[in-house]
Amino acid sequence: MADLQDEIKSEIAGNTILVYGKGTKDAPRCGFTLETIQFFNAFGYPYAVVDVLENMPKREALAQLTDWPTLPKIFIDGQFYGDTDVLDPMARSGELAKLLEKAFEGKGVTPTIQLR
Image (cartoon, rainbow, N blue to C red; front, side, top):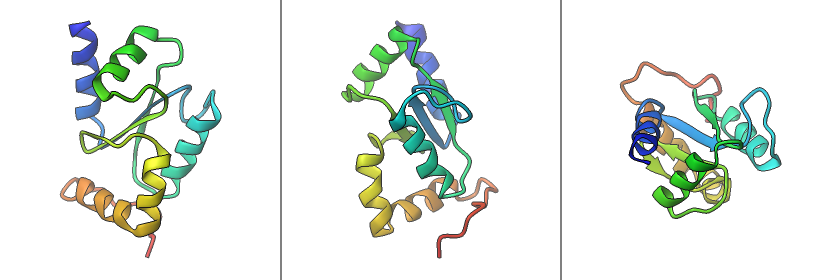
């Protein structure tokens, strides 16, 4: 289990926005994962999706790490944010745009979509 936790920590550290879901960006296998992909596509920042549908040990490790039983699970700049139920109100208030700007600051990344 320690190796799995190290793998998860490495994935989180290696991606400014990371989604653990069911399926991939190109082939989501769950409506909630699809919704999350569409949500982040609208912001125009790069993000990664890790498919954990068939990997029960990893799903269990993620549930323990986050104390969040469902997928998808979203990490931004190393911090766990739940799913789009949590992020959608943040997006509507403008808080998420500021969070993403800060998360990508100094990384040479410009969103492909301007929200202002």
